[in-house]
Image 1 (cartoon, rainbow, N blue to C red):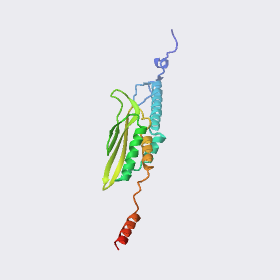
Image 2: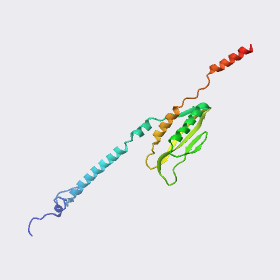
Image 3: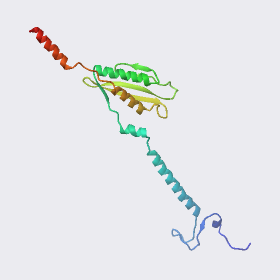
Image 4: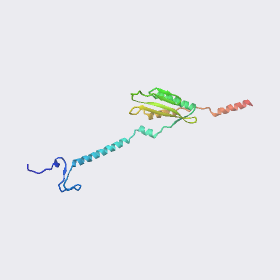
Length: 194
């Protein structure tokens, strides 16, 4: 039973300081938990790495999101008459071709599709197209869409809007009669009256 005295701190991994040693002004002597200091340091490093990883991942956006931020679609405008009629007709045709749901409302200023039933979630978008007066004889055609999914719409709203805009802009402006034909009528009228 005789033998060397081994302090309890040596068995549980605590660093033992002799009674005359002072840490933080204590003259009685202390046992400082050496492993817990290492654990604290390791936790700090793990937390730092985790925080940096979260910041790095949250800063990333997809290429599609970058494109939608970089390219704001040009507003779609038309002039009253044949130009607006052709573009509005093309908008109606686009919605009919691309929407999964049937057209619910169709008028001179609104094309709207129905959506999924109340308890159904579906990534297919619903569309809402409006023709809004911007000034005398000038209108804007606005595209809006939504889907009832916690994930992204399929197709994505930005790609659907780009396709819609491209389709509307491809419509040839309605040709109006050139002013020269009016002059010819006036000239022929003047010739016959002489």
